[in-house]
Image (cartoon, rainbow, N blue to C red; front, top):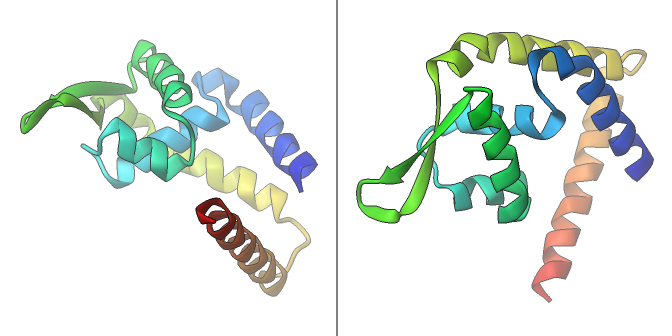
Length: 134
């Protein structure tokens, strides 16, 4: 399972390099596009990563002109994350790229196999979260 995850990330990174993206950056952009204005803490929780890792990802996305961090008007200590016009213009290209890669990954699998695999992974994730809470 871990080998497959690493292989998927490596393939994604290699194919997305021309767009200036990595798997982590694309995940962040897609998460932000679903909930613009979320805090950095919320984004780290959504992506299930530590804050320092997220900061490196956001630094890279800022340099590429994909995101901007703004102070929350209600609490200046909190940084909210927004997509730039550049990112919005490229969001559909990123979605299309991700969907094409997913289609290649799922090639030869029927819908039931994919659904069972997804359900198994979700159950394993829930078990991990439960274990973390013990």
